[in-house]
Length: 380
View: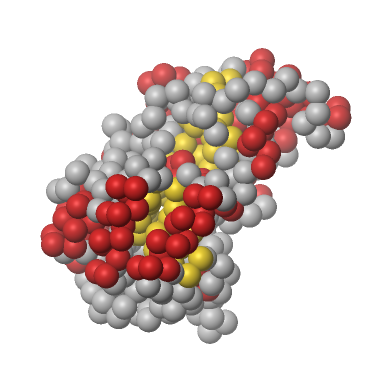
């Protein structure tokens, strides 16, 4: 049965109108990467919480808080963000404030944190005063995970981050000078982004570069070049996200990136990085575009999808993917994406019969009641 026919078998996807040419090309080029050859697919989602431990239903922002060392301040004011993304984060403007924030978060049940901050005019987050306290945090709470947004770095900074024993280093890789200049308002070059990635992967850090699709006002420009940059190095995993410019200025609006072009990029990324975990992060458009993007991600053989659309887990099983579900919530999805990328046994392995039984129970009851609760292998 061809893949379009399989999509039509999935009730939530039966009205989805995917590009037949793209689906056919995905089937031809990625069909042999399904099943175990693709390494399985892990869905990070709270929608299967009835399969997990009873504690997962209480999972909230306390589990993986986001902390900004600059509060809501950022010098760049990029057109897709305008620093608004920092506003809801926990501010920690001094090392002492970070120590207090971590202790309070751990007391509230936190497993780790995303550490970031606004950039200076050179796209650097000024972590210098924080390195000693980060080392103290890791020495005192070795199980507490720290995923750090590094921004641009040099070798010295990369090694100082390594010395702090952070668990994951994340940075956006941008492949178009026009995007760096116009969207980021930044006087740096594409080469600067590649040098930063090179410096990070030269350490023992788990490095997880991100590529933002549609970053140039909703259209593709430097994504293929960014993929080539990543391919010249050996990161632990790569996270693909799609531009969500909620705060774009009216004079420079973003369009919604084309789902078909995103699907083709997934295919190119899978072929360019056959041995690297590829993950679809939380950030992507909502509605029909999200469903299309998620379906293409599964067909292209991506290894992880955060918060999949309804029906996509079933689609993966019908396509022969080895399906795992890691119960989590949006506040910890970043952590699970970057820290569990290679974890064996992460999440609960499900087969098509289990998924269909779950769906029948959900649709008949209108909720997840009546589905047996079992322990998650992820330990969530």
